[in-house]
Length: 279
Image (cartoon, rainbow, N blue to C red):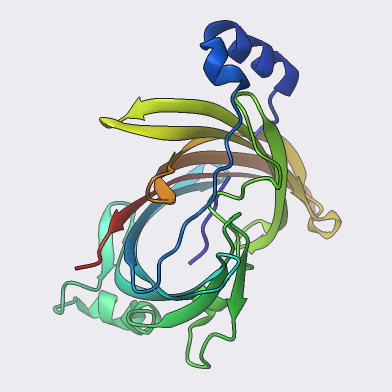
């Protein structure tokens, strides 16, 4: 499953100026060396919910996917890089409010059975990944039976830290290119900004703001007419992992076909949550 970790680029200098004016000066100028932390044997349960709303010439469709994975840290190298086995545990897919697949429900309608095999083959599948303390991810030889749905997208971190320590207002850029049905090849440039340490859901967490911008491949012959997006990621520095991320992205475009003009809209709302699952 792809994670659409991430709209329009914000005016970074203006945001830094505002942050410096309203935040306590001791926090604004202190530097943080934040990293992911891994311990062999630890298991994180990761739940990702994604709502995908599409519209072609005002004909809407909404797909809601909920995926749960176990991230088992099998080993950690001297530099902190971890080898992680990611195993799909549960999956539910809804289209326009109708559940078409639920791995927790063994009984299915005839219509569900026709497409169940595509989704059922994902359950229990494992992809082994390497994850550096900065957040860089490299997938390692997934097994041959791993479905295309898990193989086709390049690895992308939910939170990639810059190489240097950061302070409130620090910003940096990450890029990703992926292939998306109905869109084609889409390049995303994420502008990150460190907001600072704050209380979120009764916990002291580091908040990061992310704003994406998009570029379609030249071969798509589509014209972007609107793009926007925003999101927040909350990071627990004691546990060395994300607590929660919430990201929304929207892309609208048009494409002439013969004497017609096709207008397409695409919006994703993605929420990921991490929990400790180690007994």
